[in-house]
Length: 452
Image (cartoon, rainbow, N blue to C red; front, top):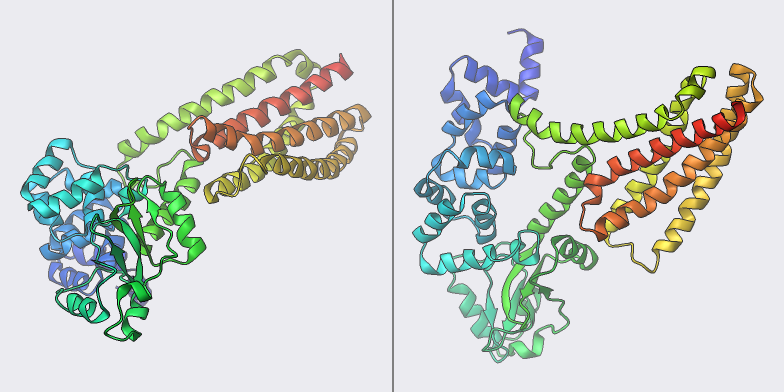
Protein backbone atom coordinates (compact mmCIF):
# COMPACT_ATOMS: atom_id res chain seq x y z
CA UNK A 1 0.00 0.00 0.00
CA UNK A 2 1.38 3.43 -0.92
CA UNK A 3 1.87 6.20 1.64
CA UNK A 4 -1.07 8.15 0.16
CA UNK A 5 -3.36 5.15 0.44
CA UNK A 6 -2.28 4.60 4.05
CA UNK A 7 -3.11 8.23 4.90
CA UNK A 8 -6.53 7.96 3.24
CA UNK A 9 -7.21 4.73 5.13
CA UNK A 10 -6.33 6.25 8.50
CA UNK A 11 -8.68 9.18 7.83
CA UNK A 12 -11.52 7.01 6.56
CA UNK A 13 -12.63 4.26 9.00
CA UNK A 14 -15.01 2.78 6.41
CA UNK A 15 -12.16 2.39 3.92
CA UNK A 16 -9.92 0.96 6.64
CA UNK A 17 -12.53 -1.63 7.65
CA UNK A 18 -13.28 -2.54 4.04
CA UNK A 19 -9.62 -3.14 3.34
CA UNK A 20 -9.29 -5.21 6.51
CA UNK A 21 -12.33 -7.32 5.56
CA UNK A 22 -11.03 -7.80 2.00
CA UNK A 23 -7.70 -8.99 3.38
CA UNK A 24 -9.43 -11.42 5.75
CA UNK A 25 -8.19 -9.68 8.92
CA UNK A 26 -11.44 -10.18 10.85
CA UNK A 27 -9.66 -10.13 14.22
CA UNK A 28 -8.35 -6.66 13.38
CA UNK A 29 -11.88 -5.56 12.40
CA UNK A 30 -13.34 -6.88 15.67
CA UNK A 31 -10.73 -4.99 17.70
CA UNK A 32 -11.42 -1.81 15.75
CA UNK A 33 -15.15 -2.12 16.45
CA UNK A 34 -14.54 -2.61 20.18
CA UNK A 35 -12.84 0.79 20.38
CA UNK A 36 -15.95 2.59 19.08
CA UNK A 37 -18.98 3.73 21.11
CA UNK A 38 -22.30 2.14 20.16
CA UNK A 39 -23.43 5.27 18.29
CA UNK A 40 -20.14 5.20 16.39
CA UNK A 41 -20.66 1.57 15.40
CA UNK A 42 -24.16 2.43 14.15
CA UNK A 43 -22.75 5.30 12.10
CA UNK A 44 -20.16 2.95 10.64
CA UNK A 45 -22.86 0.45 9.65
CA UNK A 46 -24.93 3.15 7.96
CA UNK A 47 -21.85 4.37 6.10
CA UNK A 48 -20.91 0.93 4.75
CA UNK A 49 -22.09 -0.89 1.60
CA UNK A 50 -24.36 -3.94 2.15
CA UNK A 51 -21.60 -6.58 1.85
CA UNK A 52 -19.44 -4.87 4.47
CA UNK A 53 -22.44 -4.41 6.77
CA UNK A 54 -23.14 -8.11 6.92
CA UNK A 55 -19.62 -8.85 8.12
CA UNK A 56 -19.58 -5.95 10.59
CA UNK A 57 -22.87 -7.01 12.20
CA UNK A 58 -21.56 -10.52 12.77
CA UNK A 59 -18.47 -9.11 14.52
CA UNK A 60 -20.36 -6.88 16.99
CA UNK A 61 -20.50 -8.23 20.55
CA UNK A 62 -23.91 -9.73 21.30
CA UNK A 63 -24.23 -7.56 24.40
CA UNK A 64 -23.82 -4.42 22.31
CA UNK A 65 -26.23 -5.29 19.46
CA UNK A 66 -29.29 -3.85 21.20
CA UNK A 67 -27.52 -0.57 21.94
CA UNK A 68 -26.28 -0.33 18.36
CA UNK A 69 -29.61 -1.07 16.67
CA UNK A 70 -31.42 1.76 18.43
CA UNK A 71 -29.14 4.28 16.68
CA UNK A 72 -29.72 2.88 13.18
CA UNK A 73 -32.20 4.37 10.72
CA UNK A 74 -35.52 2.53 10.38
CA UNK A 75 -34.66 1.15 6.96
CA UNK A 76 -31.53 -0.57 8.22
CA UNK A 77 -33.26 -1.68 11.43
CA UNK A 78 -35.91 -3.42 9.34
CA UNK A 79 -33.27 -5.21 7.26
CA UNK A 80 -31.74 -6.64 10.45
CA UNK A 81 -34.94 -7.37 12.40
CA UNK A 82 -36.77 -9.17 9.60
CA UNK A 83 -34.09 -11.89 9.72
CA UNK A 84 -34.80 -12.57 13.42
CA UNK A 85 -37.56 -14.50 15.18
CA UNK A 86 -39.39 -13.24 18.27
CA UNK A 87 -36.98 -14.90 20.72
CA UNK A 88 -33.98 -13.35 18.99
CA UNK A 89 -35.63 -9.91 18.93
CA UNK A 90 -36.36 -10.18 22.66
CA UNK A 91 -32.76 -11.16 23.38
CA UNK A 92 -31.47 -8.35 21.17
CA UNK A 93 -33.61 -5.63 22.76
CA UNK A 94 -33.41 -6.76 26.38
CA UNK A 95 -32.27 -3.90 28.58
CA UNK A 96 -33.25 -1.08 26.21
CA UNK A 97 -35.22 1.88 27.55
CA UNK A 98 -38.99 1.53 27.22
CA UNK A 99 -39.33 4.24 24.57
CA UNK A 100 -36.44 2.87 22.47
CA UNK A 101 -37.90 -0.64 22.66
CA UNK A 102 -41.34 0.65 21.67
CA UNK A 103 -39.84 2.40 18.62
CA UNK A 104 -38.33 -0.89 17.46
CA UNK A 105 -41.46 -2.99 18.14
CA UNK A 106 -43.61 -0.60 16.11
CA UNK A 107 -41.71 -1.66 12.99
CA UNK A 108 -42.26 -5.39 13.46
CA UNK A 109 -45.21 -7.53 12.30
CA UNK A 110 -47.97 -7.66 14.91
CA UNK A 111 -47.43 -11.35 15.61
CA UNK A 112 -43.71 -10.86 16.35
CA UNK A 113 -44.46 -7.84 18.55
CA UNK A 114 -47.01 -9.85 20.53
CA UNK A 115 -44.56 -12.72 21.06
CA UNK A 116 -41.81 -10.33 22.22
CA UNK A 117 -44.20 -8.67 24.69
CA UNK A 118 -45.30 -12.05 26.03
CA UNK A 119 -41.68 -12.97 26.72
CA UNK A 120 -41.26 -9.92 28.98
CA UNK A 121 -42.15 -9.79 32.67
CA UNK A 122 -45.51 -8.25 33.56
CA UNK A 123 -44.20 -4.89 34.77
CA UNK A 124 -41.96 -4.26 31.74
CA UNK A 125 -44.70 -5.45 29.37
CA UNK A 126 -47.21 -3.05 30.89
CA UNK A 127 -44.79 -0.13 30.52
CA UNK A 128 -44.03 -0.85 26.87
CA UNK A 129 -47.69 -1.49 26.02
CA UNK A 130 -48.62 1.87 27.55
CA UNK A 131 -46.20 3.58 25.14
CA UNK A 132 -47.32 1.49 22.15
CA UNK A 133 -50.92 2.58 22.79
CA UNK A 134 -50.01 6.11 21.67
CA UNK A 135 -49.06 7.38 18.24
CA UNK A 136 -45.28 7.45 17.82
CA UNK A 137 -45.39 11.13 16.82
CA UNK A 138 -47.05 12.24 20.07
CA UNK A 139 -45.75 12.87 23.59
CA UNK A 140 -47.04 9.43 24.60
CA UNK A 141 -44.95 7.80 21.89
CA UNK A 142 -41.86 9.77 22.91
CA UNK A 143 -42.07 9.34 26.67
CA UNK A 144 -40.25 6.92 28.94
CA UNK A 145 -42.17 5.44 31.86
CA UNK A 146 -39.04 5.27 34.05
CA UNK A 147 -39.83 7.98 36.63
CA UNK A 148 -38.96 8.65 40.28
CA UNK A 149 -41.89 9.98 42.33
CA UNK A 150 -42.37 11.13 45.93
CA UNK A 151 -45.19 12.69 48.03
CA UNK A 152 -45.50 16.24 49.35
CA UNK A 153 -45.27 15.21 53.00
CA UNK A 154 -41.98 13.33 52.62
CA UNK A 155 -38.88 14.87 54.18
CA UNK A 156 -35.64 15.55 52.35
CA UNK A 157 -33.90 12.91 54.44
CA UNK A 158 -36.51 10.29 53.50
CA UNK A 159 -36.22 11.17 49.80
CA UNK A 160 -32.43 10.86 49.89
CA UNK A 161 -32.66 7.45 51.58
CA UNK A 162 -35.19 6.41 48.94
CA UNK A 163 -32.82 7.44 46.13
CA UNK A 164 -29.92 5.53 47.67
CA UNK A 165 -31.98 2.34 47.54
CA UNK A 166 -31.94 2.46 43.74
CA UNK A 167 -29.15 0.61 41.97
CA UNK A 168 -29.25 3.28 39.27
CA UNK A 169 -31.28 6.38 38.41
CA UNK A 170 -32.92 7.26 35.08
CA UNK A 171 -30.82 9.06 32.48
CA UNK A 172 -31.27 12.84 32.17
CA UNK A 173 -32.43 12.83 35.79
CA UNK A 174 -32.78 16.46 36.89
CA UNK A 175 -36.14 16.49 38.73
CA UNK A 176 -38.06 14.23 41.08
CA UNK A 177 -41.77 14.25 40.31
CA UNK A 178 -44.21 14.93 43.15
CA UNK A 179 -47.58 13.12 42.97
CA UNK A 180 -50.56 12.44 45.23
CA UNK A 181 -52.05 9.06 46.09
CA UNK A 182 -53.90 9.03 42.75
CA UNK A 183 -50.61 9.60 40.90
CA UNK A 184 -51.75 13.07 39.84
CA UNK A 185 -48.84 15.43 39.28
CA UNK A 186 -48.45 18.04 42.04
CA UNK A 187 -45.10 19.58 41.15
CA UNK A 188 -41.42 18.88 40.61
CA UNK A 189 -38.55 18.72 43.09
CA UNK A 190 -35.31 19.88 41.41
CA UNK A 191 -32.26 17.90 42.46
CA UNK A 192 -30.33 21.12 43.07
CA UNK A 193 -32.94 22.13 45.67
CA UNK A 194 -32.95 18.68 47.25
CA UNK A 195 -29.18 18.55 47.71
CA UNK A 196 -28.87 21.91 49.49
CA UNK A 197 -31.95 21.66 51.73
CA UNK A 198 -32.11 20.78 55.41
CA UNK A 199 -32.80 17.04 55.93
CA UNK A 200 -35.90 17.83 58.01
CA UNK A 201 -37.44 20.03 55.33
CA UNK A 202 -40.55 18.59 53.70
CA UNK A 203 -40.95 18.27 49.95
CA UNK A 204 -43.94 20.64 50.01
CA UNK A 205 -41.65 23.44 51.23
CA UNK A 206 -39.16 23.22 48.35
CA UNK A 207 -41.10 21.77 45.43
CA UNK A 208 -41.83 23.89 42.38
CA UNK A 209 -45.48 24.12 41.40
CA UNK A 210 -44.67 26.30 38.40
CA UNK A 211 -44.68 23.34 36.03
CA UNK A 212 -45.74 22.85 32.44
CA UNK A 213 -46.73 19.19 32.16
CA UNK A 214 -47.06 17.88 28.63
CA UNK A 215 -50.40 16.33 27.58
CA UNK A 216 -49.90 12.77 26.44
CA UNK A 217 -51.53 13.45 23.05
CA UNK A 218 -49.48 16.57 22.19
CA UNK A 219 -47.71 16.36 18.80
CA UNK A 220 -43.98 15.64 18.95
CA UNK A 221 -43.10 18.84 17.08
CA UNK A 222 -44.97 20.90 19.69
CA UNK A 223 -43.11 19.07 22.44
CA UNK A 224 -39.82 20.03 20.77
CA UNK A 225 -40.91 23.68 20.63
CA UNK A 226 -41.67 23.68 24.37
CA UNK A 227 -38.27 22.20 25.19
CA UNK A 228 -36.62 24.85 23.04
CA UNK A 229 -38.58 27.69 24.63
CA UNK A 230 -38.01 26.58 28.25
CA UNK A 231 -34.52 24.98 27.97
CA UNK A 232 -35.79 21.81 29.64
CA UNK A 233 -33.72 18.70 30.25
CA UNK A 234 -36.82 16.63 31.00
CA UNK A 235 -40.55 17.21 31.37
CA UNK A 236 -43.41 15.18 32.90
CA UNK A 237 -46.20 13.76 30.74
CA UNK A 238 -49.77 13.55 32.03
CA UNK A 239 -53.01 12.02 30.76
CA UNK A 240 -56.40 13.74 30.51
CA UNK A 241 -57.00 13.23 34.25
CA UNK A 242 -53.72 14.88 35.25
CA UNK A 243 -52.20 11.52 36.14
CA UNK A 244 -48.46 11.13 35.62
CA UNK A 245 -47.76 8.59 32.89
CA UNK A 246 -44.09 9.22 32.09
CA UNK A 247 -41.52 11.83 31.17
CA UNK A 248 -39.74 13.05 28.05
CA UNK A 249 -36.01 13.75 28.02
CA UNK A 250 -33.92 16.06 25.88
CA UNK A 251 -32.24 13.22 23.96
CA UNK A 252 -35.61 12.17 22.54
CA UNK A 253 -36.41 15.78 21.65
CA UNK A 254 -33.10 16.11 19.78
CA UNK A 255 -34.16 13.08 17.72
CA UNK A 256 -37.48 14.79 16.93
CA UNK A 257 -35.73 17.98 15.82
CA UNK A 258 -33.25 16.04 13.68
CA UNK A 259 -35.99 13.91 12.11
CA UNK A 260 -38.13 16.98 11.43
CA UNK A 261 -35.22 18.72 9.71
CA UNK A 262 -34.35 15.67 7.64
CA UNK A 263 -38.01 15.15 6.78
CA UNK A 264 -38.38 18.70 5.44
CA UNK A 265 -35.21 18.37 3.38
CA UNK A 266 -35.80 14.89 2.00
CA UNK A 267 -39.54 15.28 1.37
CA UNK A 268 -38.93 18.07 -1.12
CA UNK A 269 -37.29 15.41 -3.31
CA UNK A 270 -39.92 12.79 -2.54
CA UNK A 271 -37.56 10.83 -0.29
CA UNK A 272 -38.01 9.42 3.20
CA UNK A 273 -35.69 10.64 5.97
CA UNK A 274 -35.24 7.01 7.04
CA UNK A 275 -34.12 5.85 3.59
CA UNK A 276 -30.92 3.86 3.64
CA UNK A 277 -28.10 5.56 1.73
CA UNK A 278 -26.73 2.19 0.59
CA UNK A 279 -30.05 0.41 -0.10
CA UNK A 280 -30.08 -2.00 -3.09
CA UNK A 281 -30.71 -0.64 -6.58
CA UNK A 282 -34.15 -2.20 -7.14
CA UNK A 283 -35.45 -1.13 -3.72
CA UNK A 284 -34.28 2.46 -4.21
CA UNK A 285 -35.58 2.64 -7.78
CA UNK A 286 -39.04 1.41 -6.72
CA UNK A 287 -39.31 4.09 -4.05
CA UNK A 288 -38.25 6.90 -6.35
CA UNK A 289 -40.41 5.76 -9.27
CA UNK A 290 -43.63 6.98 -7.65
CA UNK A 291 -42.32 10.49 -7.14
CA UNK A 292 -40.89 10.63 -10.65
CA UNK A 293 -44.30 9.59 -11.96
CA UNK A 294 -45.99 12.44 -10.09
CA UNK A 295 -43.47 14.90 -11.49
CA UNK A 296 -44.00 13.51 -14.99
CA UNK A 297 -47.72 14.25 -14.75
CA UNK A 298 -47.06 17.84 -13.68
CA UNK A 299 -44.56 18.24 -16.54
CA UNK A 300 -47.16 16.95 -19.00
CA UNK A 301 -49.64 19.53 -17.66
CA UNK A 302 -47.14 22.33 -18.29
CA UNK A 303 -46.48 20.94 -21.77
CA UNK A 304 -50.21 21.01 -22.53
CA UNK A 305 -50.19 24.75 -21.80
CA UNK A 306 -47.37 25.18 -24.33
CA UNK A 307 -49.30 23.04 -26.84
CA UNK A 308 -52.21 25.52 -26.71
CA UNK A 309 -49.91 28.15 -28.21
CA UNK A 310 -48.14 25.99 -30.77
CA UNK A 311 -49.13 28.24 -33.66
CA UNK A 312 -47.64 31.27 -31.92
CA UNK A 313 -44.37 29.41 -31.33
CA UNK A 314 -44.28 28.35 -34.98
CA UNK A 315 -44.47 31.97 -36.11
CA UNK A 316 -42.24 33.55 -33.46
CA UNK A 317 -39.58 30.89 -32.91
CA UNK A 318 -37.41 32.83 -30.47
CA UNK A 319 -40.23 32.72 -27.92
CA UNK A 320 -39.09 29.16 -27.20
CA UNK A 321 -35.64 30.49 -26.26
CA UNK A 322 -36.98 33.03 -23.73
CA UNK A 323 -39.89 31.02 -22.38
CA UNK A 324 -37.93 28.94 -19.80
CA UNK A 325 -36.60 32.15 -18.18
CA UNK A 326 -40.06 33.19 -17.02
CA UNK A 327 -40.93 29.78 -15.57
CA UNK A 328 -37.53 29.40 -13.91
CA UNK A 329 -37.66 32.80 -12.18
CA UNK A 330 -41.16 32.08 -10.89
CA UNK A 331 -40.06 28.70 -9.61
CA UNK A 332 -37.08 30.11 -7.71
CA UNK A 333 -39.07 32.99 -6.19
CA UNK A 334 -41.89 30.64 -5.19
CA UNK A 335 -39.46 28.17 -3.64
CA UNK A 336 -37.99 30.93 -1.46
CA UNK A 337 -41.43 31.77 -0.08
CA UNK A 338 -42.48 28.12 0.16
CA UNK A 339 -39.37 27.15 2.15
CA UNK A 340 -39.85 30.05 4.56
CA UNK A 341 -43.51 29.21 5.17
CA UNK A 342 -42.89 25.47 5.65
CA UNK A 343 -40.19 26.26 8.20
CA UNK A 344 -42.47 28.73 9.99
CA UNK A 345 -45.29 26.20 10.09
CA UNK A 346 -42.94 23.63 11.62
CA UNK A 347 -41.91 26.14 14.29
CA UNK A 348 -45.50 27.17 14.98
CA UNK A 349 -44.91 30.79 13.93
CA UNK A 350 -47.85 31.05 11.50
CA UNK A 351 -51.46 31.36 12.63
CA UNK A 352 -54.68 32.69 11.02
CA UNK A 353 -54.03 36.05 12.70
CA UNK A 354 -50.69 36.70 10.95
CA UNK A 355 -50.97 34.79 7.66
CA UNK A 356 -52.53 37.82 5.93
CA UNK A 357 -49.59 40.02 6.97
CA UNK A 358 -47.20 37.40 5.61
CA UNK A 359 -49.00 37.35 2.25
CA UNK A 360 -48.88 41.16 1.96
CA UNK A 361 -45.16 41.10 2.79
CA UNK A 362 -44.44 38.43 0.17
CA UNK A 363 -46.47 40.33 -2.44
CA UNK A 364 -44.39 43.43 -1.71
CA UNK A 365 -41.14 41.49 -2.03
CA UNK A 366 -42.33 39.87 -5.28
CA UNK A 367 -43.37 43.23 -6.73
CA UNK A 368 -40.02 44.88 -6.02
CA UNK A 369 -38.01 41.94 -7.34
CA UNK A 370 -40.40 41.61 -10.26
CA UNK A 371 -39.86 45.23 -11.31
CA UNK A 372 -36.08 44.93 -10.99
CA UNK A 373 -35.63 41.69 -12.94
CA UNK A 374 -38.40 42.42 -15.44
CA UNK A 375 -36.49 45.58 -16.38
CA UNK A 376 -33.23 43.64 -16.66
CA UNK A 377 -34.65 40.83 -18.84
CA UNK A 378 -36.56 43.27 -21.05
CA UNK A 379 -33.32 45.11 -21.85
CA UNK A 380 -31.54 41.80 -22.47
CA UNK A 381 -34.33 40.62 -24.79
CA UNK A 382 -34.27 43.87 -26.76
CA UNK A 383 -30.50 43.78 -27.18
CA UNK A 384 -30.73 40.12 -28.15
CA UNK A 385 -33.52 40.34 -30.75
CA UNK A 386 -34.05 44.09 -31.34
CA UNK A 387 -37.81 43.66 -30.84
CA UNK A 388 -39.62 46.07 -28.48
CA UNK A 389 -42.70 43.84 -28.33
CA UNK A 390 -40.81 40.90 -26.90
CA UNK A 391 -39.30 43.17 -24.25
CA UNK A 392 -42.76 44.23 -23.04
CA UNK A 393 -44.09 40.68 -23.21
CA UNK A 394 -41.34 39.02 -21.16
CA UNK A 395 -41.31 41.85 -18.58
CA UNK A 396 -45.08 41.61 -18.05
CA UNK A 397 -45.02 37.79 -17.94
CA UNK A 398 -42.23 37.83 -15.35
CA UNK A 399 -44.14 40.26 -13.13
CA UNK A 400 -47.27 38.11 -13.35
CA UNK A 401 -45.39 34.90 -12.58
CA UNK A 402 -43.38 36.30 -9.66
CA UNK A 403 -46.53 37.63 -7.99
CA UNK A 404 -48.30 34.32 -8.63
CA UNK A 405 -45.32 32.48 -7.15
CA UNK A 406 -45.49 34.63 -4.00
CA UNK A 407 -49.17 33.87 -3.47
CA UNK A 408 -48.72 30.14 -4.18
CA UNK A 409 -45.61 29.85 -2.03
CA UNK A 410 -47.34 31.56 0.90
CA UNK A 411 -50.71 29.84 0.81
CA UNK A 412 -50.03 26.38 -0.64
CA UNK A 413 -48.34 25.04 2.54
CA UNK A 414 -51.12 26.46 4.74
CA UNK A 415 -53.80 24.93 2.51
CA UNK A 416 -52.05 21.55 2.29
CA UNK A 417 -51.63 21.38 6.06
CA UNK A 418 -55.31 22.22 6.53
CA UNK A 419 -56.33 19.22 4.41
CA UNK A 420 -53.80 16.98 6.22
CA UNK A 421 -51.25 16.73 3.40
CA UNK A 422 -47.59 17.17 4.32
CA UNK A 423 -46.52 20.57 2.85
CA UNK A 424 -42.87 19.47 2.74
CA UNK A 425 -43.81 16.49 0.59
CA UNK A 426 -46.38 17.98 -1.79
CA UNK A 427 -45.56 21.69 -1.68
CA UNK A 428 -42.68 21.75 -4.15
CA UNK A 429 -44.52 19.72 -6.80
CA UNK A 430 -47.66 21.82 -6.49
CA UNK A 431 -45.65 25.03 -6.63
CA UNK A 432 -43.68 23.95 -9.72
CA UNK A 433 -46.93 23.05 -11.48
CA UNK A 434 -48.41 26.48 -10.71
CA UNK A 435 -45.38 28.57 -11.65
CA UNK A 436 -44.63 26.62 -14.84
CA UNK A 437 -48.22 26.65 -16.05
CA UNK A 438 -48.89 30.30 -15.19
CA UNK A 439 -45.50 31.40 -16.50
CA UNK A 440 -45.97 29.68 -19.87
CA UNK A 441 -49.59 30.79 -20.14
CA UNK A 442 -48.79 34.44 -19.35
CA UNK A 443 -45.80 34.61 -21.68
CA UNK A 444 -47.33 32.79 -24.63
CA UNK A 445 -50.76 34.33 -24.12
CA UNK A 446 -49.33 37.85 -24.25
CA UNK A 447 -47.21 36.89 -27.26
CA UNK A 448 -50.29 35.63 -29.11
CA UNK A 449 -52.12 38.86 -28.35
CA UNK A 450 -49.26 41.04 -29.64
CA UNK A 451 -48.14 39.00 -32.63
CA UNK A 452 -51.26 37.33 -34.03
